[in-house]
Length: 311
Ligand SMILES: Cc1cc2nc3c(=O)[nH]c(=O)nc-3n(C[C@H](O)[C@H](O)[C@H](O)COP(=O)(O)OP(=O)(O)OC[C@H]3O[C@@H](n4cnc5c(N)ncnc54)[C@H](O)[C@@H]3O)c2cc1C
Image 1 (cartoon, helix red, strand yellow):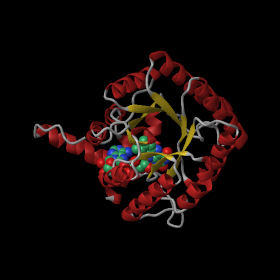
Image 2 (cartoon, helix red, strand yellow; image 1 turned 180 degrees about the vertical axis):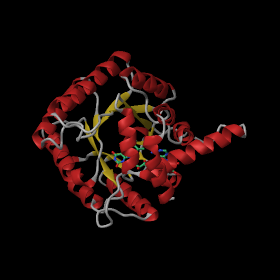
Image 3 (cartoon, helix red, strand yellow; image 1 turned 120 degrees about the vertical axis):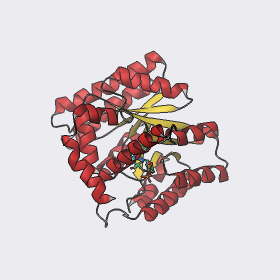
């Protein structure tokens, strides 16, 4: 499968842009804020919440980072104006982390402050392991400045995650727990599928033990079952936790969660840089290309057989 995934990724730049656009449109709301707005409107109408991610290509100047900050401010204003139920997710590299820690903190503070003034919330996405220390440090600094409308992400694949949970526990953080999407070396991250699952369950238990608000972000049916079991076992109420999924990925599983009464938040990326962004993400993790290829094939076969597919 790995060779197959890598082969797809190598072929991608040769695939005509409209074809890539067609394949990506299930996973990316579109190039403009209005596209994200309409996606969130549909998501809210289905009884789901959203989190909007402004796609930025690699930031190389302070002006580009400032443009991302303004884009988030526009998102908050629009959400408020349209009375939509969505928060935002930000990538620290898009806010200038690679240009300077202080610059990034200032930019993040502007976004979080704007969110706070509109009673909204900001989640810091977790990027590759070269950024984990800075991300967690920045998260702590802003929380200690009094910004409670800020959450973070921990990746089950990282070996360091249990100690990060222990170190953050005094802040009672709001944590999105996911497997982790970046390719990491074996000394940093578990490589084995079952080891990542086991680590996810251990991390989820530790976060719940520490009375954190957890966003369980996965489309893995086995983990979804574990997640349901753990929240039920602890008698958690509906607003003590949430599930999260990516736009366009296995929507039927999300519908099930909503029918059962769980809160579900959908991650909605949008932005003009969607093409470069999609290619880069696919090149970073060829496994996603395999998922998309398998899913597209499944849909085509499903359509030919007259079935809607499981989504
Ligand atoms: C809301 C949300 C936010 C996330 N934020 C981060 C983050 O900040 N940092 C980070 O490192 N990772 C993040 N991730 C990605 C996460 O780490 C995983 O890489 C991703 O969710 C796939 O893992 P899985 O738990 O769904 O299980 P898997 O076993 O990988 O996937 C289960 C099934 O879901 C489908 N699937 C999963 N992912 C995709 C995809 N991208 N495209 C098409 N089909 C797919 C496939 O059918 C697959 O068989 C996030 C994921 C979600 C849902």
